[in-house]
Length: 301
DNA sequence: AACTCGGGGGG
DNA sequence: CCCCCAGAGTT
Image (cartoon, rainbow, N blue to C red; front, side):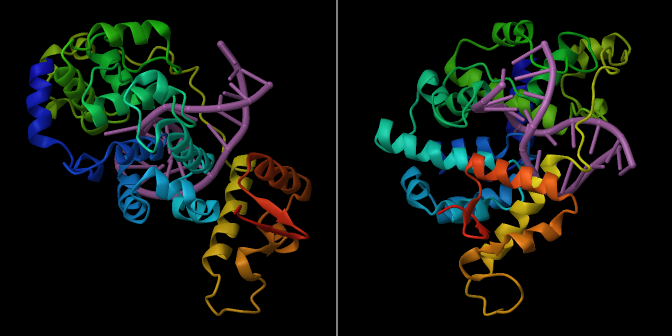
């Protein structure tokens, strides 16, 4: 199955920009952080612009945080952008500006967790690691477990099963990581799997069992969105991003101040519940995503 | 283990 | 309109 997937990957892999031969380890790390909970199709164009502007950890480390947050655009979870800059600075201080190659050192970096550390080891350095993202979880749950979907959260048993099937050879392990992820992203999808186009459908336990339905589907609760703090935070960040982008645009008198500063009275227009808005702004300031000067809010830096 | 944290595109 | 997306950090 791993050999078949390796061939399939070699022939059909998406030409994502961070898979280009001239990509850097730092570029791979940036792509992984950007792709945390954000579809890669939406990451790709932004990654290219980002890497052109800030090619190295040194460039990101010295950039104004406001520029970093604005460049992050609408990727979502902007705290990731903050951590990515902290990560760049940590690499400057701890590793002389070079992305470390060992998993423990990677794990110690801001914004780098179990998945991202393993992914950088495999994709940036071609070394063996246990790469388990949402795609790999689903592929293994179906092919090996015979289940429609994995459990809501990653279990230790799942990690153990994933580790047990990673090839011992470095190059083979890296290829397995890339191809199993690609299969989950392109063919073995959550919603409407394309089993007719799957190169390993002959080996799939879920298919062999007659596609039994998801066991714990009832417990799977969807993330709330409308009216939540996350939505309000997003609206506030959007206003501050746009204000920052209009510095020097010559559009005076539209209620937005110079230097990307926006009066709190203007920010208040994005949400009717004043108490909730205040709470969210306080949270954004607490997170380091927003700063307040006098009666005005702005991005940090 | 349970929460929080954005935003958008596909079915 | 609902669901899910190359997760991480905090409590």
